[in-house]
Image: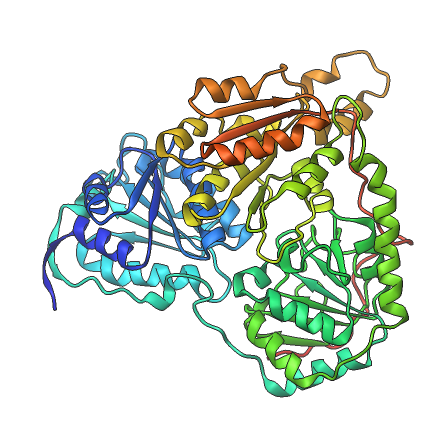
Length: 572
């Protein structure tokens, strides 16, 4: 029943009803709403930058598979929008709330005002202005529907008033109406056409060298068990995208590892030899396919995606199955006949074994400075069985994807979609979304510098995550190309990549967190154990060798040419 209610109370009760437990923001925005949220038990996480607030909401959303909320006043809207590129590319449901200039100020050079819709339109599934309180019930519900339906993503509401005050201080006869089915992902579990599922099952049954590629849609759908069941039923090797890294424990005999650009050689090699590739909830973009070279052009493809527009985007599919990953895999399982492992499975396992043998010496190395591979091996051995590992982009993503194995089914992996510095604030958000699970951020010093100030946020708000910093005092991924640019020419190439040597452990201690400096390999494990047992925000600052570089991605020969001669695409 409708009742007189102010906008602030309406918005607070609605967010609380959708299950929002934390909200990430920069002052000053929706102060009356924040007061009402406190009364309802929702935590307000005040951050030091709008981009960090967006990254925290992103980590919260990905870890908890629910809508993360971030907000900023009008002048901070552009900064907030830039942070939404990550959940847009990472397919995370995030709601961004901003204020905008009063109606009489619009188009008159209002102080610090720029148009918001172009900024948010580029990075959001939907954006809408909220000019009156009467609009809010309709637009807020639609925002949650947009964020969680189909392929998840960020959405934006632009509230009248620099800090949204004209909406939150207004009063109207309204009733908060919450559609709980849109509080998380997936909001719906659509099923593909059953006839196409039977055809896909027949293709899998006839294939002599099939491979499954599991992507981030597997995690969003909660379909890891189904991936394992189908792989085991048909003895099919499984490669993953970076977002899909946790789809199958990496000690599973059918796991090839991450493929594409930030990959293990064995994964790319096996996928390039496949005569059928089943993409499950994986976009076929540049990173996962190593610039569309893996699988090879012309390889028959079956693709499962909740968004029909993704089917055949880069590899036109023999069969496109538009549906939820878990539901579609369950249907496939019902249509398949068990198959024993044969020569193809043995070949794939041999490729993995060879790769492991090749990297074993560097993973066991006692060299000083510490090799990143050894750091990764220590993290893998220590990582709690229910941990969430959050990795930055660049070398942090490559080392994490190739050298840190997730060996327990409950372990999760979140990674940056490309924005350096994302991992640390995202880890704070992930911990807020999953407070009972250990959350570990893996980043380099270049990435950690971006949002170092959020150590104060972690301490003030009591968010006990562990940041492991691969500290080589440089932007390590850039070193080789910059030195090659100089190629013996006079000059100072280090000015383009090197940082001052800094102890992040000492900075952490000054900011009220636990800081541990590690300079020898034998101290990594004790430091990780101490960080976890402390119950405090912790930084494990590991001094590593700048000269260590991961292997480049394996690419099939001859070089890939334009995609052509694909089989006919069919989908539903």
